[in-house]
Image 1 (cartoon, rainbow over the protein chains, first blue to last red):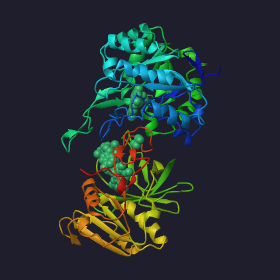
Image 2: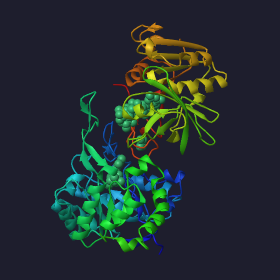
Image 3: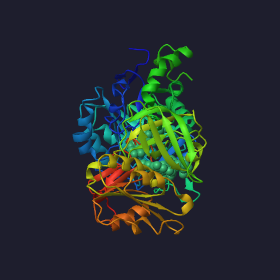
Image 4: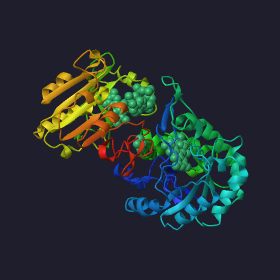
Length: 302
Length: 244
Ligand SMILES: Cc1cc2nc3c(=O)[nH]c(=O)nc-3n(C[C@H](O)[C@H](O)[C@H](O)COP(=O)(O)OP(=O)(O)OC[C@H]3O[C@@H](n4cnc5c(N)ncnc54)[C@H](O)[C@@H]3O)c2cc1C
Ligand SMILES: Cc1cc2nc3c(=O)[nH]c(=O)nc-3n(C[C@H](O)[C@H](O)[C@H](O)COP(=O)(O)O)c2cc1C
Ligand code: FES
C-alpha cells in the first residue's frame, strides 16, 4: 500500500481520486488525453434501462464558482453501455470501474443493476437516488428514507458487488436517508449529488435552463458537501465517499478529514480536463505540508 | 484537444463591440477550419467557446463579440497576458464536400470561422463566394479580409445601410456546389429552407466542457444524438432535424 492508497468496500484504490458520474463519460475519451489508469477508479455516466436523450437545451448555466446542469440523464441505455461503451473502455482502463445507475421505478433500478452486476469490469454499483433533473424517479427516491430503503433493498437482492447509495443534498436531514440505505444493505454511501438551483436571464426575463431548474455543483457547493460528509460519517458505520466542489489536493484532504474514504470529482473535470491527474500528482507534497504520512490516517479525523 | 497557456499578441477592436484577438504559443498547431477553442476568463467558472478565425504559423486568431461577463473580460486583455485555452476542439468543416464553387455564408460573429475556411478552400483552387450578413453598416468587420481571399463577396445589412438590404438569403449566388454556414439560429433555419445544395452548418449550444464529457450540448439528428462540441459543431445540413 502506498501513501495515497485507500480501500473502498474491499477493493484497494491506488489513490482516492474518482472522477464523478456525468463528468467523465465512459472514460475512453479522457484516455486520449492521459493514462486514466492513474485514477483510483471513475464512475461512469448515469445509466438507465432504456436509452435517453435527456432534457432540451440549454442544459448548462453558470454562477460564481459553479455551474448548473440539467442534462437529464442522457445515456444510450444499459444494453449499449455494456456492448459498446464498456467494450471501448476495456482496452484503456485496467481497473474495476464504478457503474452509476438511475431509474424511474424500483424495477428499473433492479433491471439495470442486474445487467451491470454481470459485467466483470464493474467493481461497484453506485445507485443514483438523487438526480434532480428528471421527473418521476431520480431524486424522489433519495428524499424519502422509506423510498431510499426500498430501492437499495431491492438492488441488494440482485448483486453481491459492493453497493453504494448516492445521496441527494436536497433534504433536511441527510443522515436519515444515509441510515435507511445502510439498513437496506448498502456497503457505502456517496454524497453529494447536485443542489437544486435556478438562473434567470435578465435579457430574456426567462429561466436560462430549458428545464427551468438544474443541479448546482462546483466549488460553490464545497462547504455544504463537507458538512454533509461530516454528518453522515458520524451517523453511519459504512464508508462514505465525499464529493461536491472538490478542485484541489487540499480539497481532497479536507473532504477526507470530514470523513470520506475516497473522493469524487465532477465539475472540475469539465473546466480543466487534467484536473484529476494534476490533483493526484500534487497530493504527496500537500500531505507533506500538513504532516500527513498516509491518507488513511486522516479519514474522519476532524 | 490540447491545453495551452497562450500569450496575447494583440487584441484590437474591429467595431464598437467586436474584437480580434491574436494568440501565440501552441506547439505544433494542428487546427482545421470550423474548429473552436475554449477560453478560460478571469472571474468566470466555465470556459468560453470561440471559433478559430485563422491559424497561421503559430498565431491563432479569434474574433469575438462582447456578449456578457466572459467576453467583456477578454476585451480587457493586453499584449503579454497569458491565456489558458483548450484548442483543437470539434470536428471542423469537411472541405472535401466543397465541389468547384462553394459559398460561405456568415451572419455576425458567425463570420469569423469562415475566414480560415475560405483561405483553405482557395489553397485547393476552388472558386469561393462569400455572403456576409450584418445588422447595420457600423457592425461590419473583415469585409476587406474576405475580399482579398474570395472570388466574390456580397455584404447584406438588415437595415440597408450598406450593401444589399436584407438578409444573407437575399444575396445567395446561383447554383453553388456546396454551402458552408455559421450564424444565429434564425439565419441558419432560413438557409436550411432556402438552400438547394448540400450544406455544412456550424451550430452553437451552451457548453459545460467543450470536449465531449458532460452531455451539456446535445442535439438530435437524423443519425442519432450528437454533441455539438465533439461530434460537431459542424453538421451536414441533411442530417439536421429542422423540418418544423
Ligand atoms: C462552438 C461555438 C463557437 C463560437 N464562436 C464564437 C465566435 O467565433 N465569436 C463570438 O463572438 N462568439 C462565438 N460563440 C459564442 C460565444 O461562446 C458566447 O458569446 C460567449 O460564450 C458568451 O460569453 P459571455 O460570458 O460573454 O456571456 P454570458 O451571457 O455572460 O455567458 C453566460 C454563459 O452562457 C454561455 N453562452 C452565452 N452565449 C452563448 C452562445 N451564443 N453560445 C454558447 N454559449 C453561450 C457562456 O459561455 C457562459 O457559460 C461561439 C459559441 C460556440 C458554442
Ligand atoms: C454535467 C453533470 C452531469 C452529471 N450527471 C450525473 C449522473 O449521470 N449521475 C450521477 O449520479 N451524478 C451526476 N452528476 C453529479 C456529479 O456526479 C456530482 O455528484 C456533483 O456534480 C457534485 O460534484 P462536483 O461539485 O465535483 O461537480 C452530474 C454532474 C454534472 C456537473
Ligand atoms: S459541452 Fe460537454 S459534452 Fe459538449
